[in-house]
Image (tube, rainbow, N blue to C red; front, side):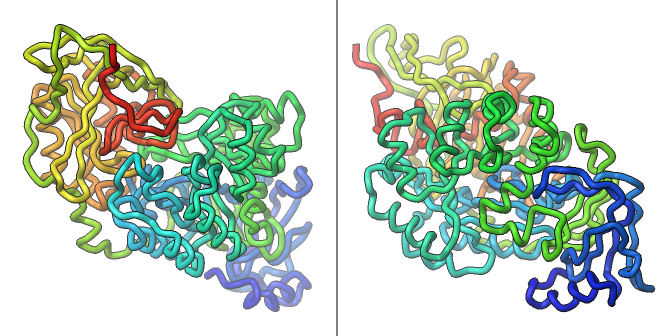
Length: 593
């Protein structure tokens, strides 16, 4: 049982002095010291009250009759891995399900921003996520969402977050800081609410998460940094990452299910030789299938190593760098006295097999098997009844009326493995007064689902490669989380949308009006309370169904659910219309001739 350091201090001293037994002793390991970036053989670790009491050559004096002893057998002892920026909901799991999925992969600390559920349920959704996070066997810190809606005036969220609510949440246990400040134009322009949220966070001595999704490194960037954001995970190039670090921001390099931004930035360390202290690894968004089959932060560390990074540096970026960034370096991130006893045993630093995981002083996983319970809260009816369409949708709801033989339209261009899209145009035929999808250009619709208005906004998207009469619908629709429907056939789009309304949310694939696959997400239309393996199985069925319909994009589900993210350039769709994120304005779907 983890105790606060002040309650454990006296016992830790007794154990370190050789006068008392420990709860757990790991013997004969190679100590990966992230403070000095070295490995030290023949080291023992003694643990009590969920914390490390002693690290040194011989902890024999700490072994008593009740002490659990683990023989490391010369394996490396690595600090538990930390995900510095992510969204639990993106795994389609609740905090309990997410913890259960990542613990066997060596993740022992998570900093998560629940702005997905905040857009659906407001402050109450944040509280529910915080509540379930606090009872997990690993450390799960919650960031208070900053932007709901993410871009005021460009979208309508289910429940807006106010500056007063941000200030209130800063006094809650388990709230580590402010979630990513996505309204970077607002900060740069001196928006009163955005600055007030940041000020309330800084006044509480907590960390402000950043999100500057723009290539402009001129005055707007400098104004954003001056506004108080401490980090940024939206960097995609070496130059962007270096610019953040030079200004004292943490550069969070992400490898998620669909974002591959480590390789293009890590050259700042591997080639330019910059100090890695302010470079941090994270996932941002991980699909449940990725978690179950590929890994979590262990996957990110291995990828960084494969990109040429020294294994010890890669481990630093996933442990002590993250802990220090949040002001928790005396609590987390290293195998040193007083810290939470989060330790991984691995036989190889380069390939990083996760062979045994200790979190807060207890063995939580071994050989890929979870050994502890991850408790769940009782999610209320309000969370399980969040999809309100207001009426049954029909094919005509997805039609764009126009005159003439053809029309020049704006098209959202999907970019594989990246969050940004391209602002494209296409000349599409008009039949019966309706613009028709053609070739790789599909219909896209944003269906209002929070207040039951029956509203549908239509547009066009390219890059999915669908063939035949196909429709894919999702109530996961970052960030306002209405419903995104993409398809080649309007009748199938209506069928898919109505199906999600009937089941209370999820992701579904229809072809010729018939359901091919569905992931049920009954909690806020975002998450399942089923085990990760079951969710991953259903999610994989979605991926296969999309592939069978012609889509060959890597993790196309993640691309789909971000099409309404009106804070990342270039072109998006919202419940208010088509959004040009380069200028942060609503634009006409049909381009004037």
